[in-house]
Length: 166
Image: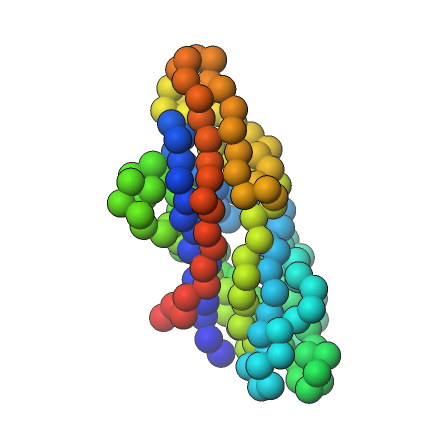
């Protein structure tokens, strides 16, 4: 069993607190990424989705996980459990210091997550206090105008990285 921390970073323009719509532990936020088999190294051909609110029984029949998957190449089973409570929003200060912000911890058995994809369901707050909800980051960027602050706001150069976490 290995724990992987999903960390995100990017450039925020006049925005702060980028996070999933319901917060970092949003039970309905969908994470999109691929898996690499821990046995044969095969990369899953399609993206896999996982949410905190959904669990499935383990193939052994003892317990549950947020995701179970079988490697199409070697046939090995793997499972993933999400561990909430360790994430925080990406802030403007993080961006200015070129730092990653932790988002979620994944306990993985049999495979490792790779290639996080940003999609819809994000929120951020303008420096003026204006809230921007249901931000779609599928294109890797977001641009809008903050009427209250009378300035453009934006998100660009997004990166997601999985690192081993102890």
